[in-house]
Length: 347
Image (cartoon, rainbow, N blue to C red; front, side, top):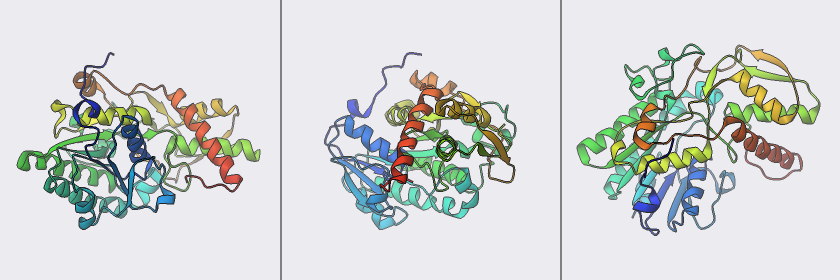
């Protein structure tokens, strides 16, 4: 489908307008900082609580601040002089992290609470909040063949415990700041973002990265087994990082999407078993599958209904999973080799 003539940051902002990105030391935030830098923006303020050596990407020419955005004073500081705020800061990770650390996930509500108030007080023109498909009613996601989720399926509310409820309540803050105070807000519900320069080990990684790593490890060690969380029949859609950054830009600058949550994800549904097969094909190896039924595995099935985003933007994420996974596999393989050689890597 041909995209409409959508507004973008490059057509709306001046190149020296200040853009603030919360969570810029993480996967998506770092990619977004690079995206805007490549668009020619000269004043990008990247913020994350991690020490600089632990940031996933350091973009040349971007101001980098190590500050905890759950602290109100820090939010006021980073929003000074801002024109647009992109809040991607949160304590989160893959299903292993989300199910085991619900309190940490819930505490992320402090970040959005303080950031949106600081953006409002600073006179920001627009505020973006990164929500999640975890905000959707879990009762609609029990089966692998569950229907794709449309935006209205968030209510009646029964979000995923911890992380999902934090996202749903933070969405309400964004909507009320527009209704009551006139701050233009934009909300995207991300569906499983993957790609290079993301977490690939350590417990916070998501399924594509974890599976690529396991296949790479098996090739390197000569092991012929791979452990899969759950029975492998769980289904998901996976969006490549370049589609995500482009979608954020279009959603942020669409007048029809002010204070209106919208799906941002691929509508191509695959099972975890199928994802493993793709990684095996890329790695040129076939492994014996062992299923850990006691491991965190999330809902039975989740997919993005892209009817609304096609209608409003004339666009949807389109990078083929096999191509995106191939790029991700190659990047993780290099990280794996670098780690073995004693070099610094993203964990």
